[in-house]
Image (cartoon, helix red, strand yellow):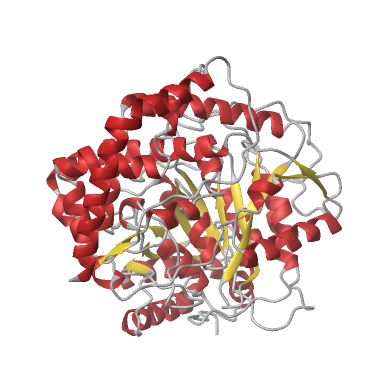
Length: 612
């Protein structure tokens, strides 16, 4: 009884404050701001990020909020107040003269001649042939290299591995609480792919180093013969008959697709909280009482739990990198357009990139080399440069300049900051130099990214919002209601801001090879009992968790998150490396050395050793 009454009180207070803001202060505040911004804007330091404000809602309180938000009262008073309180109206106070950039595609620059450099296949062979680090004892994730060693030695066959996976998937569904990482799988399909791979190994005619490797794909991708639900209960009423491009490439490489992975409904959140009947809430393998992160929640949980060494996700606001970080594994968001998103639900066409979630940087490099490249069925990235892994296996980081905006870098929890600062010093010890840089207008970029991704999602999902409103999760309804507050002018202004931030980055990458930040400002949040029934809405957490992610999505630059340690509660902490457009190779080179920083890998509470 208390939550609805409290929320009703909140609503009344919002209404009064909104009326005061709209009627009493609106003209003065915005006019002064616009007057201050007249003329060409000069880039200034980003400053500390602004905190957002919104109460965490769940249960009856969330139900009431969603109801009020989708009434005339909510649209006129409540939501405009939330927009102002969270600074989402910032664009309206700015006078930006740059032309808008609606798609963050960047032409490939002139690259130095590396004709004598190793080819990607040579680098991959070096990575898979490398001996394991015998100096490290204790637990280690089973990666692509471990599977290949079993297959090549005859210790196990892909068919035997597939049977183990099927047994583990059955166990996952029966465990308490259920892991809920893989939400659709088919025993017959798994065995067909595994038996074909076993035959190829027997005849010594394997297709690639992914032959026989178990993988899963986020439910946002079309994968035959599964339902393309994208985390909902109303989409994908019939089994798919056509693969997304990434699924097709994985099949052609001989991978065993073990199923499709759970996700935050329609990619609208960063926790993975999805209480609907087809999905339920996936658990973090390091602590099942915590969320795995989202929206590629099941993908990261499956990799961290050992069900497969490779998963494929999509990333529009950190949706690969946040769950990879919360689950203590590696996540790569490619340059916008680098990996085809054909066959993926087009929720946000200007911010989303696809990428792998893996047990190691070497595995991420292998998968990246297979999935990257132009796709005639996908309009972006058609003129991309050839994907390389140049200098990835260099013995040190000499000659590389690592950019850090320390004010921005330090906007995180103390435990996260401490681990990340030590990781930066480790990279310095390998010969890299740290250069202090300034990332201008990060608050403007944060707000502009929110406007772009929510506006594009609301546009695409408008028919669903009208037809399937009551079948959507409460949090999704709340997010889409908020999205309706943004106007065409907001969207155009946000894309003008994109032009500015992309230009700032071009200048910064003229002086450094990459930018370092913590991956997420905090560790994985706890699951509350009420989340299991109604889900939850926590705008403050969502915005905070995306703090270091949004620049990559907004401007299209690639980003890699690598595990570097754990909190005192045993939850993973990752560091992020971002580079200029199309330079994933330098991310992987740095990431490979960054992995060496963590002295030991802790075994997740939920872990299945498929090769045992």
